[in-house]
Image (cartoon, rainbow, N blue to C red; front, side):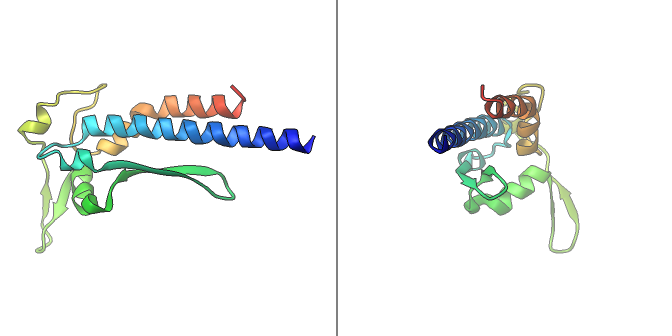
Length: 134
C-alpha cells in the first residue's frame, strides 16, 4: 500500500512538473509575441526557470534574465522616471507596432501580464486536470 501511494505521489509530481513547464513555455511564447521590439534583445531574454518544490507546493519562475531586468521593467510598465523625477511614458515604436495584434492584445507594455491573462483559463484547466488525475 505504501509503495502504491509513493508511486502515485511520484506520478502526480512528474505530471505537475511537466504541465507547469509546458504552460510556462506557452506563456513565454506569447510574451515574446507581445514584447516591445527595438533590437530583439528583450524577446531573447524571456526565460523560464526550473520547477521548484516547497512545502506548500510547486511553482515555476518565468520572466526576463537578470541581464535585462531594469530595461524589462521599464518596457513592461510603459514608463520610466528620470533623475529629475519626471515620468516619461514609453510608446511603442514602429517595429513593435509592425508586429500587429496577437490574440486580441497589442505588443508593448504589460507583455508578460497580458501573456498570463491570455493563458489563464488554459492554466487553470490543465492544472485542474492533473490534480483530478486526468
